[in-house]
Image (cartoon, rainbow, N blue to C red):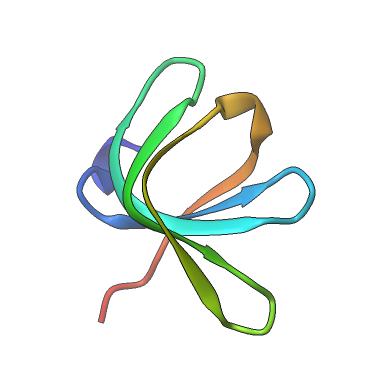
Length: 68
């Protein structure tokens, strides 16, 4: 995940929620700090969340988002 610092990542959480944001930090428990985060629904709509902390035990997948 070090290569994703400062880049946009996609988090899939338990329960199926998807959050996209700029990776600012994480720790050994995979607690993640995202800036400019937004919740992305399955129909493609998004809801702004701002700067958030996501607990690592709620994260199922962390994926880089293709830039371009």
